[in-house]
Image 1 (cartoon, rainbow, N blue to C red):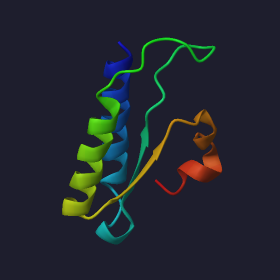
Image 2: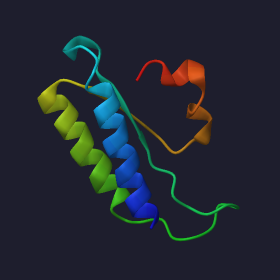
Image 3: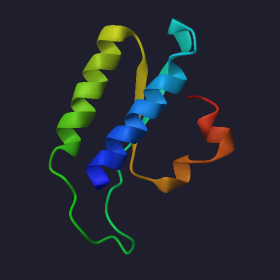
Length: 81
């Protein structure tokens, strides 16, 4: 379930950033997937997924920021994506 939410978030961010020009395209990959309290299963595939998205960004010309900090979800910060 958490992995599905991760991929859905990635897809949404990719769609929203596609509207920007090539020079300013940037995506945020949010990787936090553990339950409240900091416990629970964290999927081993997250690092590989981030690597694949960074590679795609390098090939297609968009920047990739990665964070597991929910503090990145502010209006001011999200304006850059």
